[in-house]
Structure formats: structure tokens, C-alpha cells
Image (cartoon, rainbow, N blue to C red; front, side, top):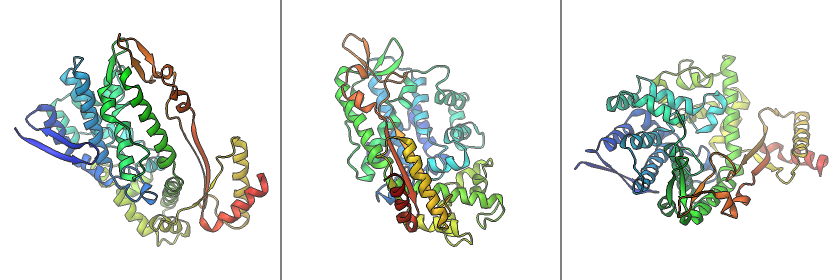
Length: 423
């Protein structure tokens, strides 16, 4: 027996029996350059400015999603017939689902307009990628089948739910991993018991839980609520991510005007800023390190706006926050923003880059959707989770923050303008 082991802080031992076809495939995929690139993409972007331990990578998360998917399928296989081919496609897809993420995860794609899902598909289908070659060597049709699976084609099934649903391996792993690495202690839940309670609703061929898993699901959904409120929507995290977006937008504008000193026009970062297609070798070089290197150079840029933004990101001089969440009426929040913009503009600030408005929302649990969690009773009857758990009504409420983020030197002026306008 040839076994490879990876020690993981969330799942402990992640083992691969290389003599087994699926395990051998997974381990070869892990060693592909396109997957190893994820070591250089931080899972939580700029969250380490608020939580110093949050420097974990998309690589670690992707391994965790794969391992969680394996455990979910193993549990289901105790009571249901699971085809090896379906299992292989599901677990490989779990491993590869984040291949296309750019620097700072979601922030970069908001600037370039290129979404990580489309890049993931391109990497899997590109004959120049090692991922494609490994998949095709295992089964010539496997790359196309994984893409179809990620798109839930031809129809959504229990295997799709394992990767993308309100009860999926992706959410299970990122909540536990982000909770652990931030040290927040808000996102803990009993994954082992939750997986033990998984079942399949035969009528719909969808993932479900047994009645003994209701409390575990409630704890999981509460963990999700707490992580969004305290970590993902943290004011410092949101301020820093907004500054990254502004810095990249400014750099892109300068690049279009041919006034950006660095990087050179053929560099992957330069092409990505302009939304140009990258070769596979250029894609491999585009990561957090390459953009952080740009920030270090741009911190001394002749353009004062770009320089100020990059120095703020490098030395944690993030924009200050004015919370408008207490105003339930969005028109009042908009009036506050307008007042602050006018005051800063009159004082000589560049309101396009020295302040921004951030409205962000998430609903911890969505009822009455095709992805609603289903509970199967002892007779196999499926009942929506929302009809069983009293917590579902509270968790179905939208969590929203409205904030203005402003350069430190303008905060007092902005606060005074808002107070004068709306009290």
C-alpha cells in the first residue's frame, strides 16, 4: 500500500491511497502547478488586517472541501448506492472548484470583470494546463464532464448539492477554517454529527438530513450568521477590500492612459488589469504576491492617489468607517452619503478615491427556494427545514450593513456634514 498524508488543522489527517484510482487522480491534481498556485491566494483577502492569523490559502480550503465531500459521500454510501464514477467526478470537482480565483479572491474579479468560475472552467478545459492533462489521462471525457457537473448539467442532483447548496462541503469547510484561523470562535459547529445525519430525499434526488440532524443544522446556520456579521462584514476587512478595489481601479485607469510605471505591458498583472486574456503560464504567475509587489512599487508612484492607497494597504492605514446601518431607510443613508461627498469635494478631497459607500447584505438561511434544506423523517417523508426549526424564521432575515469609508484626514469633516444633514 502506497499512502500519502496531508496534515490539516481542520480535518487532521487527509489521506490518499495512491493504489486506488480516484485517490491517485486526486493526488496528481494536487501536485499540478495550477492547483499549487492556490497556495499564493489568500482565502480571506485582506482579513488579516483585522485578524492577524487569517493568512490561510485557497489551497488549504480546496483540500478541505475535497475532504469534506469525501466524508459526505462515504456517509451516504452506507445507505445508498453510489456509483464510483459519480463519486470521482464530485470529489474532483470539489478539489478544483476554486482554481480560477484571482489575487485577493473576489476583489480582483470585481475590477477586471472576469469571474473565477469562468477561469476555473478554462483551466480545466485548456490543453496547456497540467490539470487538463491529468484529468484527460485518467479519462478523456473527464474534463468536459467536470465542467458539466460544476454547471449542474443536465440537472441538479444530490452530487451537485454536495458542492453547491445551503448544505454543501464548500460552506462547511470555509466556516470552520475561517473560524479557526481568525480565532473568532463565532463559526464553530459539529461537522461530524452533521455529516452523520446526511441522507438523500429519494423523491427529488437531493441532499437532505435526518431528523436527528436538525440541531446540528441550526448550529451550522447560526455559525454562518455569526461569521458574516463578525468576520466577513467586519468594518476593517470591508474598508481594506474597498481600498484594494480603488487602488486597482486607479492603476487600471493609469494603464489605459499609458501612465502606469509598473508593471510592463506584457506582464500578467498589467494584462489582467485591462481584462485581457492570459496565457496559462501568465495565469500561473498572477497571485497575491504579484499584486502585493505592485502595491510596494505603487506606494512610491508619481500619482499621489495611487501612492496613498497603496501605502495605506501596506502599513494598515485603512479608511475610517462611518456606520449608517442605524438608518433603516436607504434614502436617509443616501442623503448622508451625498452630504459627506459635497463637504469633502468642497474641501478639496477626491471623492472618487478618498471615500466610498459600502452596502453589503447576506441572508443566513433562505426559505422557500429550490435549495431549501430538507429534513427526512423516519418514514422518508421530506419536510422543509423552515417548517421544523423555529430558528429558520430569524435566520431568514437579511443581515445588512450600510457604511461610508473615508480617508482618515476627512473623517471628522464627513461626520459633521452627516450630523448637520440628518442628525
